[in-house]
Amino acid sequence: MFKSKYLNDVYASLSQRYADQPEFLQAVEEFVTSMDVLVEKDPRIQKDAIIERIVEPERIIKFRVSWVDDKGQVQVNRAMRVQFNSAIGPYKGGIRYDQSVNESIMKFLAFEQTFKNSLTGLPMGGAKGGSDFDPYGKSDNEIMRFCQNYILELYRHIGPRMDVPAGDLGVGAREIGFMYGMYKRIENEFSGTFTSKGIESGGSLGRAEATGYGLCYFVEEMLKTYKNETFKDKRVIISGAGKVGSMAAQKVIELGGKVVGMSDISGVIRDENGIDLDLIIKLSKTNSCVMDKYRDYHPEATYSPTTKDIWKIPCDIALPCATQNEIYLDSAKELVSKGCFLVAEGANMPTTIEATKYFQENHILFGPGKAANAGGVAVSGLEMTQNAMFMNWTFEEVDAKLHVIMENIFKKCYDAACQYTGRPEDLVIGANIAGFLKVYHAMLQQGV
Ligand code: 2IT
Image (tube, rainbow, N blue to C red; front, top):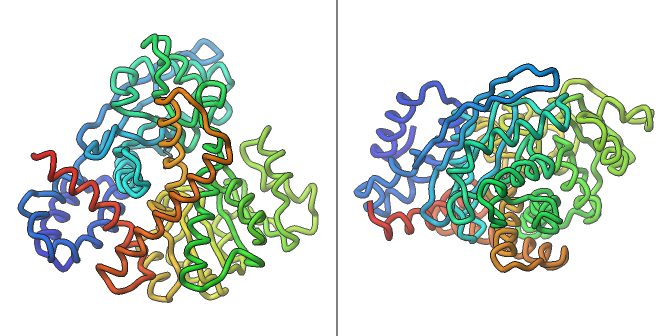
């Protein structure tokens, strides 16, 4: 599968050991493919067993969360925190509450996070946590009790210099508030151990916008560098209407693009007049799904209940911002056949390996998630800085720093792609190599 025997051996034993973890193996395979060119040039990678070490989490904490629902019934959920790599800074990464959460998904996310955090240039290691708790349909009190009980175990494993969690799917400012509140009561310390906190609790202005805005800043660099173009008049489709998708849509519109399709788990809306984002944001305040209600306000729009139908809408730019594995090969073919020329991942690993290969073979510009969606964790890093300094930056200051960070991430990926492959548009390999090198050098410095 890989050119190097060393990589083949490492991957074979990993895929045997974790045969029941398909998402994790998928993330590792995508990454290890990019290591061939480095392993050839640098024997220390093999000698120091760097790949063996980097694909194994430093620590996984697994625990039970018991809590009492509104009817007085005791409920039990499973939870974990994967502390993947701390070579370049304290563990850092979001918490996901979703029924699908399992060790494979937590490990793939924490693995990706390690290289994503490295690309930001900020001192943050990689982690991810979560629970199979499903927040939908739960009352505020149930959410609070769950979050508090979750922290009653997790608190001993986190801290401002140890591990700094944030939000992810199912975890927003409300959940972070409940978790930080409990943590603070136990530790008796206002240390800012979480990011994406509410502003009054020490959160950073611009954190809520950061992933979506950062994605657009990254795409702007791609458009400028490869095509000498901008978002102006581009047709854009965005899957997911959560924090990432809605803020990406806002920035696309601000930069002159036209969002002609959006989706959430209730379905897909195609609106040739341009999506009414204000309506989506307004409806989202009271509903977790809104696409099935959009035509009540805009009957001229078309609706499909099948989420993957979004990839059938003709577009120039596709921004998958929902979740892992939402673009399979059939959807990739659909996008290419309808004229899409740029795909950038706002979610983590939304594109399968086959779909990514198809895009690259067909010369579609492809921005991989660990680079393109790093804006969220980058501003989390800026939130840590502000908390440590006991001061707050304005929205404009944070946004300007985010912009520079995204430009730098693009440049690092582009330069690595040029240097190691001679293919300037191969940002997949560029992101993997650029993200890896900092972690690798830190691991070498710190010994075995
Ligand atoms: O996937 C991600 O980068 C996040 N969920 C954000 C992590 C963070 O620590 O802000």
